Amino acid sequence: MAVKYKWLAAHLEAMIQKNIRKGINQMPTEQALCEKYQLSRQTVRMALKTLEEKGLIEKKQGSGSFITGRSPNSLENTVGILLFNDQDYLYPGVLQDIRNVLSDNGFSAMTFSTGNSVLQERTILQSLQENPPRGLIVEGCKSALPNPNLDLYRKLMKKDCEILFLYNHYPQLSDCLFVKDDNFSGSALLVQHLAAQGHSRIGGIFKIDDMQGSERYQGFMETLRDLNLPMSDNQVCWYDSHDLQKMMNTGDTAFLQRMVQEALSFCTAVVCYNDILAYHLVDVLLQSGYHLPQEMAVTAFDNTYLSNSDILTITTLSHLPHEMGTRAAVTLLNKWKGLPVHSQEVRWNLNQKESTHTT
Image 1 (tube, rainbow, N blue to C red):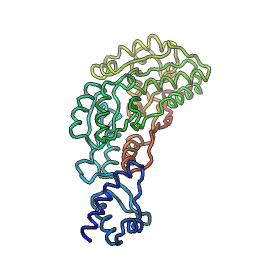
Image 2 (cartoon, rainbow, N blue to C red):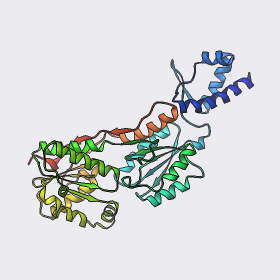
Image 3 (cartoon, one colour):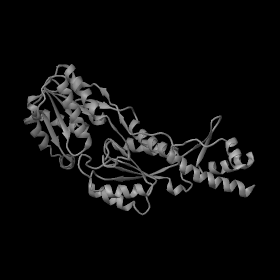
Image 4 (cartoon, helix red, strand yellow):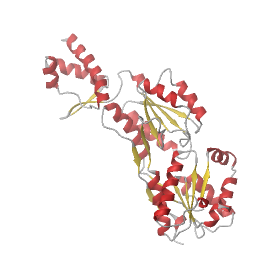
């Protein structure tokens, strides 16, 4: 019997990998295994117990045995996380949510900061080639631009490294899952809110080299069009990663000052790409002599602590607490468990605050 149950355990272990690729999550019943392999129930139970001890399956009372998605080699149960920065205002909470979900399911995490640099991204991907992690959760670098690192992602995929993108994705890697914001609807929500407050001259500030910026711009412009509000290139401002980094490192807000003096001089309200931008824009507006919120209603994406300063609380969009990181980790784990998975766009919720009081 000892030889038989070990043989069956090894056979079922190989079957698990095939079932994951086929999208099959549940193991056959004990009775089905007995009949298929002409073995006693005790032998089958010992084989299943072996798989359970290895962490490959878990039993659910009254339901049967289910694939966990873990590898029998614990060193292989590692997920790499590539984000712009693991310290900035948005990331620590998201990272912790990902780590918590992975840990609860027997996986560990390695974190890498790309700085939104394709060169740094390439260096990280090259370092992972020899011993690829089981999977990667990736925030793509400058995702609105062609990416030169697709070759390294494809090499990792050929080595069975599962890749899931967070917040954006590279369209050329169409086989990869993503969990991102519903940016189009987010901008629509902000524009509709400002219009309901009586604003008809609404400006927008968007980031030009990230996918989120172009999607938020599209939602912004199409909603202005649908509401028959002024829709001009002159009321839209663009900035890039270099402008942002310079502002964060040196406090240089020259690009925001130009926007206030030129494009936004026409407007009574503005939709900002995120809270960082809105936070610094409020300071520039006040220095330029604006009375807020009476002369300029400010809105933004993200709803972090930066939107709740003592100077002015900013109307923002947010997701449910822990939503993005948890969804990303759960989606990746479900893929390994053989469960149905799909890419997701997460809806935004409006948080009305001081900065958009009725004019």
